[in-house]
Length: 84
Image 1 (cartoon, rainbow, N blue to C red):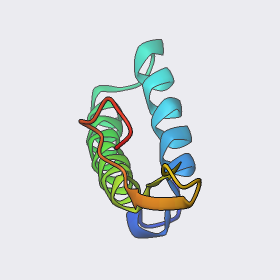
Image 2: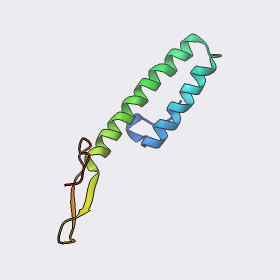
Image 3: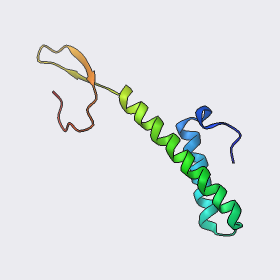
């Protein structure tokens, strides 16, 4: 479908292409071989998205003010439900 390699795709581009693939597969009017190729591409794009999300998660920081009203930056903890 796309001319870019997986490494060149942004998250948004991968999602857009994945949405197009899903639409094509849901339409059900494509030959089996083409459907299998699209399915394989979709799996590949899903992996790209997961990798990019995992990377982004490691970059996200959380900002908060301490008791002295100083702005502090800490790593974002996805499992934490509260600020420190």
